[in-house]
View 1 (cartoon, rainbow, N blue to C red):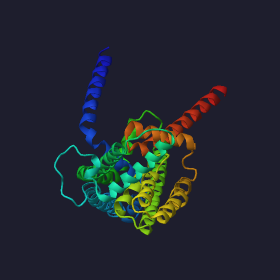
View 2 (cartoon, rainbow, N blue to C red; view 1 turned 180 degrees about the vertical axis):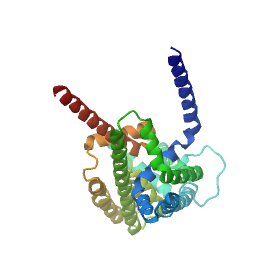
View 3 (spheres, rainbow, N blue to C red; view 1 turned 90 degrees about the vertical axis):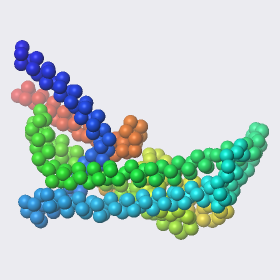
View 4 (cartoon, rainbow, N blue to C red; view 1 turned 180 degrees about the horizontal axis):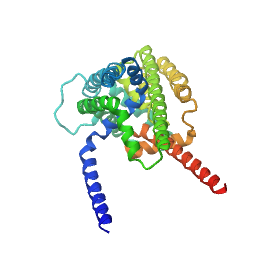
Length: 366
């Protein structure tokens, strides 16, 4: 009886300390998760360094982390810095224009817009007013223009301000992620061995789960990121040929929104085509850019992902889509990766349970 009471007390203490631990580490869960992804994706590189350096595991971990810093993180950070600079410039030119800030008045929202944004509001007002007139709806043109102008301001201002705020909040997370990645490389085998020791599953089953997690994670993350980068670079080339300004910002946003299910990069290139058509009056450039993005950019996802996955993930396309949508709804942007990984991992567990049940049935029959 005393042993049961002692076990219960230990479990209560474990739960309390576990909850406190999660609360303390909550701010670093995302960098730690990203570090796990980097350690898994670049695991083959670390193992290559280990084979070349013999028993110098920590030196191999340092070289692997340095490669990640030079090849992935620094280019990404430079891209974000360039995007943030162009976002600020876009905010100043599109919302503030060249005129000094006007005092607070009750004038319509479009008065604070630059000439380009005002032309876009005029174009949208004319088109919407024409459509409303054809269906017999009376529309106040001035109120409609003020509403559209306010919508443009609310769209662009958070984009510029949040980009800078995001850059400021990223520095600590990058440091934690790099440090955690180094230790995952250096002590990852020991961590996995300790996990296998604490897990009540058989050793071969735990090893199978770890192997499946590594394979699925590497395949899903690499396929998703390569597809996003490919679409962003191809779209950026189209923006350059079309003579679009804020090239770095728009390319970075295209890479980012490519990860959004269903609509993807069209969130960015469709408004750009509309801007070329309505504001700059360049109909040919707008039409050609739209055709290029539909035919080339949007089709990359259907080529790159199947080529990289090649049977590594047997998720049905509908289930994969729902896993991404559910992951984003539950966990935010990181759910783009977590959702498919959880579903694929669950599928692996179900296959293992099925194999165990078949083995038990055969043993009983014999």
